[in-house]
Image (cartoon, rainbow, N blue to C red; front, side, top):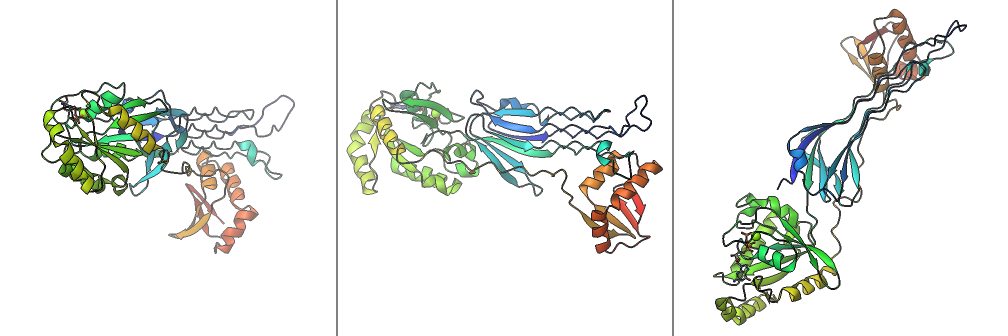
Length: 420
Ligand SMILES: Nc1nc2c(ncn2[C@@H]2O[C@H](COP(=O)(O)OP(=O)(O)OP(=O)(O)O)[C@@H](O)[C@H]2O)c(=O)[nH]1
Ligand SMILES: [Mg+2]
């Protein structure tokens, strides 16, 4: 089962603003009418109950939302890029890799339709009509669109089962799942028959709950031995564990201790989960013979052990009723995060501004001015003059002068240089 994928997502770039002048008969000096660029599409991850696996993501690594169109004449807005929606199974945790390569949880998509923006589309650049002022009726400035975010994300499916069946290989976990639910897992007399978590729905007279076989628990599982700890992740969300033991094992008690040990080594919260300890294969004569002895042994450790036969069904219904009663004492699986962590993305109009001195010039850092430089034809002297005026606006002038910029100093914004 493919339940964890590493993919790259790229949101759509914002469209560039356009530079255009209105041309009409009888209007000698048509005003600026270059429209704004469209908004780039977002990449959205959405949980859908119709989807049960992530195999779809197996073949492709990069997922891109649509880029937006550039602004057009007559103040026409560029076309917005379409969002890209990635549908994932319920229980998918979306994580994003930060600049230190650490994974940060973005959202835990546990409910149908729940979604998170994994990469935000870029804002469109403004067209030249926004830059008309009383002194400049023919602006030839326009902004470049903001590039869409690009993120490395990890989608991890955490099954949302209410109850997990844990235990050594071959103890009869699949048999119990098959006896208690309509699931039809493979059952065989060798270890590691089950290679991935199997789910089934238990229908009692009162309620239903999801039962899950968690395979691959042997000593060293937390270090990757056997099927490794991959599947232990699935156990993290269950509310109650059925700890199944083989009554025919030399020492069921030692088996239980070993498995519990693995659980706590993997995740301490797992070892604190409510457990019902169950001895299987009671139909076998040698197990029946030990029943009283085993009961006493476990009682000595404060454990009220149950006996079932997954093969004949003996005790299975009673066990499920007991499990249901115990579930009532434990709340529904908690979400990892109260609410999806908002995605940080560059804000459009906010002037986030700084100046620093760098080899004889003042370098201005301002996403807004940088986009304007990138979106305009800066080789054109008229465009350069207009940009210079823009940078000399009182709000900016104030900051520059306070930072120590003097007349005659060289200023640089992106590829554009200007003498103050
Ligand atoms: N006699 C008897 N045999 C059982 C019982 N439950 C399971 N078995 C047998 O035990 C063997 C293992 O059963 P599975 O249900 O595949 O065990 P498992 O724990 O799922 O094993 P893995 O998936 O390999 O970890 C099979 O040969 C079953 O027929 C039972 O109640 N009585
Ligand atoms: Mg099995």
